[in-house]
Amino acid sequence: MRQFEEKYLAAIDLGSAKIGLCVAKIQEGDIHIVHYKEIPSEGIQSSAIYIPMVTAKAVKKAIADAEKELLIEIKSVVVGMPRNDVVQVEASAKLEREDSEEYVSPEEVRNIKESALKTYPLENPERMAIYGAIAQSFTIDDDIKLSEKEVVGTLTPTLEGNFKVFIGRRQAVQAIEKIFKGTGVSIQKKYFLPEIMAKATLSKEELKGGVSLVDIGAGVTSISIYKGNIMRYYAAIPFGGKTVSGDIETECSLDEDLAEKIKKRFGFCQPDKLGPNHDKVLQIRLTDPFRDIPVKYISEIVTARYRELIDAILFHIQESGLQNTLRGGIVLTGGAAEQNGLEAMVREMSGYNVRKGYPKPLFSAPLGVKVICTSSTAAVGMILAARDEDLPDCATELPVEEEVKPEPVTEPVQEPVEEPASPTKPVSPDPKPTGGKGGRKRPTPPDPNQGVLPLIWTTVKDTLLKFYDESNKE
Image (cartoon, rainbow, N blue to C red; front, side, top):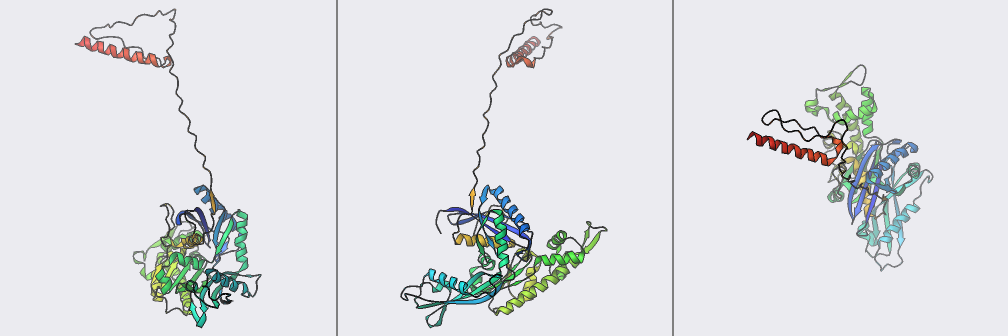
């Protein structure tokens, strides 16, 4: 990375329930997240865009809000690819090195990876696309298998790489490209999110010892398993938190928004552990007639659907063949991972250690930017990856017009103008005090139209008269 470079990076997470935009300012390699906001997404289902025109409007709004707040113009972003309908396959490539006495270089490792992706035969190239690839191992002489970091610097006449290749629908990628063409914002890079999110949430010990990262979104749940710092398995389940809200909506005859709010506020996995809320009843006054819904019933609906989801997650962990290597257990992330009681229920059903996955503290952020949450891991992970890959500046600061402060205007002091005496009322000297000791007539109040000096003179005259009265009293 070039040192002492200041630039902006922007990442957009296109989710089934929300669109999250994260903007960070990079200063000398440090990440300062200056903006993170989520708005409701439209036209997205199971993390794939199915109505691009509607989604484009939501993306434009998210970008416009960030530009207005930060006074910048966003020119490009990094974006995540869909997580559903993704198939993992194995691929390999072999390289006969020209000079076996030279060390294996990082460029050779990249070249063999690109060769494996280019030569992999897609069954239907018009409908399928390669979303990404992860190196599993590299083989050198005597069948020694090494990781991507370990193979650099070795000596060998041949180099063979083994990869996990992730294949998804080409139309889903084309839809992402389409909506950004209409916004005037270009795409710097598209990321396959599971690997990106792992670097943002998992510790080095978990990545090395074995862990399953479960991202529970609104429309899709993905399971990625890591061992020896490498992602070994990936699978996706086509439902998530939005399905739970749909069950509440159907069973309780509520609208979608109200069902979602009730799920977040009162939904709890395992109804037998509700505690003081066990006998409480919600009275829905937005319907006619009013409807009473027991909190326990809401919990039973939530528990039934999440139990089904956990069973599917445990099935895929078993399918991976790595179920006995997960020393780090299960890490839950994604917006729907915040469901009350979910962490305890997964621990009880699986027997693994379970925790929630939040972005690691590898950045700074102002107090008003709420970025430490399970729903932000994808966006933050893309920012971290873009920083590590030294992607170019994505925004320009708009010039700020200096405010012109008006100079204070000093009003000139008007000189008093003597008015001519009236012919009918001759001017007489000040009346002398009459009416007994200390008695005198009150002075006539000054005319405000006479200016400043007459007012001062009248005040001085009043003071002298008061002093004269006091002297007479003595």
